[in-house]
Length: 538
Image (cartoon, rainbow, N blue to C red; front, side, top):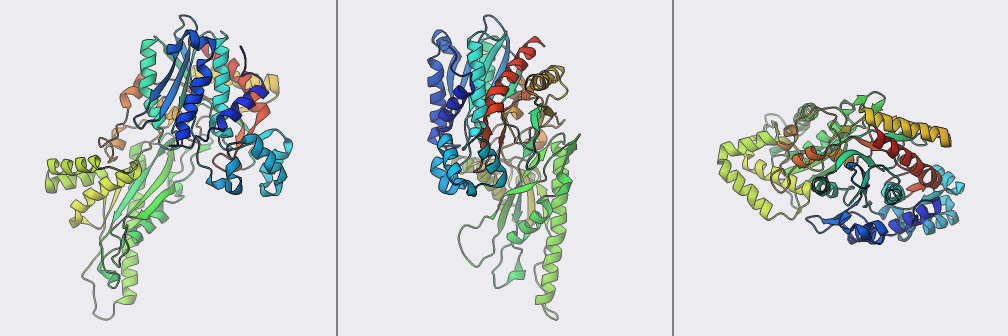
């Protein structure tokens, strides 16, 4: 039976998926996995092989789905990877109630076309684009993968297909982290050989109006470094009696935000510079005491750089900020203090990594006491990963007040390793197959790009492209060993070549998010089908 093969059928399937408002951490994120299970369990294949369709629980009550289609005794298996969650819809404004109803939203936009930016309006008027949250990122890719799974049920492929549909890709990738042991278990139980992982994330434009079509042989890496600025509190009436943590973090922002030193170039590809994702002081009540601590976290993307190299750049930025903070204090004090007046406070700033701060605390109080304090915080934890990481650092800083003011470098989840199969002969053959098929049958020119820049769960199963020891990261990650463990063993056991061939869309994470239907649902399924045939032959 074929119900997910034509453009119209796939559009209907997409709309049924989008109508689940599966915003990360919502109940609908659980419900859409139930829906996928429901529409698959009724297929003849899964009636005969019910043990090949499973829901796997996450620790927080969410779930992921695995759907295996085996071709007889074949061992070689291609993993189809997709995520079911989407970002929120507050940006839709007056269209928010239609954000998860693509046909209705698109129809309404036709009535109010003046609300759209120029490029979105052009697409709308073409009649070949569908608007709505999740249409592009990435329920269209999931839709195509379901059509491939249906082909496998009908015996079209020489090997096996295994669909993995996970939650939480948009926030912490907890779904993919939970999928790692599931992949390992299925591999062992079914005697599978994982040949490659095929993701269906959409193409990302390199610039506004970019007309090119892309496929990817890797995925960019991301680190989330943070700086805790621990100052010296003082009364607002005696401003030069201490050092305001807000002043410290502001100079760090000047050194870090869009800093060109962090731009990495590999061939013709470049990483965007860092940008702040969080900046605030840690004083939660009003008083005329200056904030003692403040924190900032930065989105840092990389391709082949090591964590050690990133650390060096981050610490240099902190050193430059330190010099400017101290200069600012003395410069402003020269205007305020008169004659022989001086301040008893003479600012200096100690720059530390989290690991160095931990050792300072152990030297003062002993390792047992430091561990006791951290264990207590873990037991009472009611914060997310980023806030809890900050709490752990601030707790150690308070134990070492004698060396304040200080700036402490640390890392928080999520962390995405940079991965690449760009030079893998099988992936090169698969990419060439996709390009040749698209050109020969549709006149479309696909361009191979090494790194998918939108971040993806491929980071957890692909070959790492940076020769970097994870220890360089985890020893600067307060939460590691305190409620979070990096799944190095599971990752190593299922590492496989990767490729991303996805649909055509525009404006991910914007209210104008939309999907082009002809390429995505007429051409792409055939391009990917041919690519899978060749990957099994390779």
